[in-house]
Image (cartoon, rainbow, N blue to C red; front, side):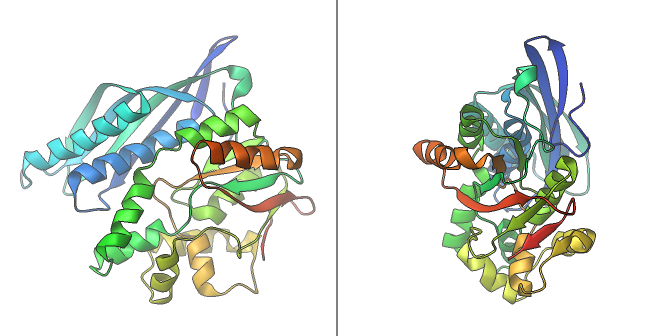
Length: 304
């Protein structure tokens, strides 16, 4: 049972009322503290299960580690952070695999369960659907500032909290209300992941850049040129389908900024918009309606 090209996770139907959802992700260290890195990488890896509307149940660690040159205590702290995040999510750690590598990389392979008729994909968005985003943008830019030694500790701490926060409650609200489509916003940035949703659904979208939630300091660092290389790749790849002539470069950099463990981008029918926002709020998830799906030429994104 395939869920479509470029979907967030694979789904395989076992019975008429049970399917498994599977995903895997591996990222380089983005923070110096190994425990924190383990938490963030794990939250990032689990997210695709929530984006499908699934319930994650098991995980396996995947680690690349320079065991010849780095203290194994560091690896132990990464694994401890990962385990604590898995426990928070109610996921059983059932194994893993490690390889020697010149730099540290860590991630998880996660298996979840879902009813085959309740799978949420990227290709289900409909014209006039409202687009709801559950985390502010800018973590890629902040991580670049962190690597440059220019990020204050309080800003770093807020970014860490955001990146290590699970999307479980957002997924719960999405399922309870009934979303048409969803994707988590990660490496391709908001516009890149929205482009995938528009392509898969055969329609277009409109985004209001004035209401998109942005980590305040991200704009400052973007203006200073502290931008991850992935942003430029995202912008180049999607420029032909994005109409944003009146938008300044700093804003565009944030809209294309590759996120680590970003929020969910949820497409929901207009008559369920208020219910969805209320359900998210009741679960402690801040969210913003950032745009809507449109008709016309397919796979176009207009940024206002």
